Image (cartoon, rainbow, N blue to C red):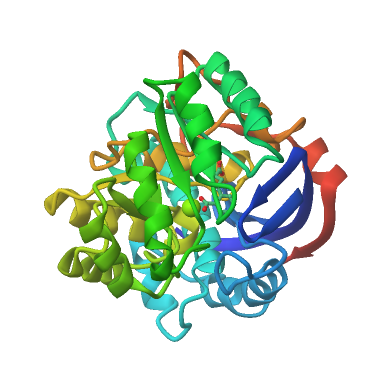
Length: 367
Ligand code: OSB
Ligand code: MG
């Protein structure tokens, strides 16, 4: 497989409504779309999900765009690649920058699957025909407004509801939801907003029968996560802390949590996601697929990842309409009884909505 041409698009896609986390608010999803073209006229697509500011990891959209443009794409252009798993050999001299690398990895997997007339899910070794859809709800102005949002999500069929929390917007908010929905699969995501000294605040959440608490402490703080987990009955799930297989191994050794949110983007792509999933499965650590408010191209890769065996919890994979009035894929992703059907056509299994891509592109680079 030879990459003979490539396209980068910097896109600012409007969100249906602002999304608030403990680190800030977003009104557009700013990302980079990568198209890779081979010598036979096939095209593969991948998203670089880095946000406009480095508030989730150290990467940000413009840093990733530059790295893709000046370094990563030139490194693979006109090279003979037998499989996407070879990519790490080309990128060994480039440290981290996983979201930029993930764009190349996912585009290459899409291309590889298309060349083999396989769905992306099958190409990476997944067998599920549907994946469980969950929804992530941002921090709301009041517990009452949060309950209204959760009611809408439950009505739409979401199987699991995740609530963003931070100190001051945690117990009362979650309790209000739990009172209304005693049996709902409910969880919380703190995006590192707490410190170990806040342990009493977090212990209080144990009474709410949460499925898990995601990333309460800082990304590089596996030790304190282990101390916290020992004192909580609710399982901890690590998100920002797990960027590689080595991170997952350290988490397992230390007991820093019991569940991993594997995001394709932060781990550097589908090849790395597969390795982490296999390790987790072998060590009874449950996984699920997280999202980055991604466009349809990112979400199509997420759907494929979630078909792997170790993905046992509902995922942060929502319908296109949850985030975007206009997604960049067609048909849009829809829920079917709280699940998403895995496409069976080749590659990511969706076409691209070029009119939407051109409408919201702010910069383009052609190779
Ligand atoms: O921590 O999982 C996260 C959105 C932006 C940044 C970080 C996170 C999130 C989400 C949304 O929770 C997940 C989604 O794409 O639905
Ligand atoms: Mg998270």
